[in-house]
Length: 130
Image 1 (cartoon, one colour):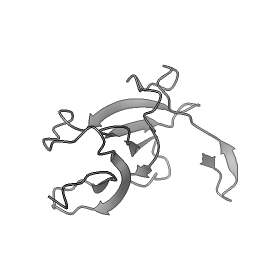
Image 2 (tube, one colour):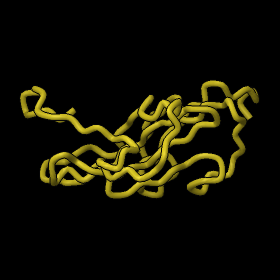
Image 3 (cartoon, one colour):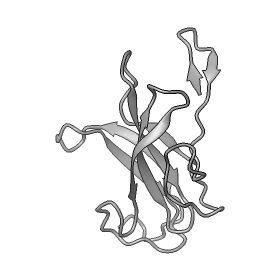
């Protein structure tokens, strides 16, 4: 939702795989895309892009790193990276029912590389914290 300075509703942005939002990946009907959404850096006045992390906790699950361009209406996805088993440099294995991306939390720059880091929950992961 887009809000004005008083916090009142102005407009909304819907990101789907229908091709109208700039998001180009095909999602299964049961993907639960958008179950969790977190901004990775605050939208600054005058800034036209916003980085967000979107959970897709279906089956194995995944998260999507999206850059949104707000300079036009409606806003569109201008860059996307999927992170999950075998995608986006993610090297851990996930079982079919792990639901990686069920929860997402921003935690600041934990490793000191200048980039926002995130914690990602995997609701059905059953390895006891491995």
